[in-house]
Length: 143
Image (cartoon, rainbow, N blue to C red; front, side, top):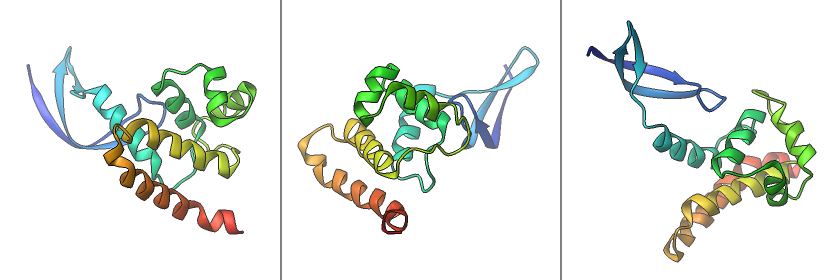
């Protein structure tokens, strides 16, 4: 089995590009494929979305919903919107959604709560993430 290291690799299995560095590639049936722990990568990606400097895209909304194994109706309860609104956001595909900025902030905090608040000792981390999220959107909120 032949192997090589790809210095820069774009993984698009989540519906949006994720840039990876130094990815081990394994040759299978005359072509190279990345050796990636997809679950570990998904965990890393969901955490990075909390402080992403750009607005969520439709594909990222779908990734978030499926990461937490939620139906449209279950997810709609989290963001306090209709399931049809969720469907519309997801149809934006790789473009930023027209989601209200306050809903996006709340969704980022929801992600933070679900993935980082494993115990009470992480409360400070949550508030630090909250501050980062609000700093990202501060110019948009005050304008």
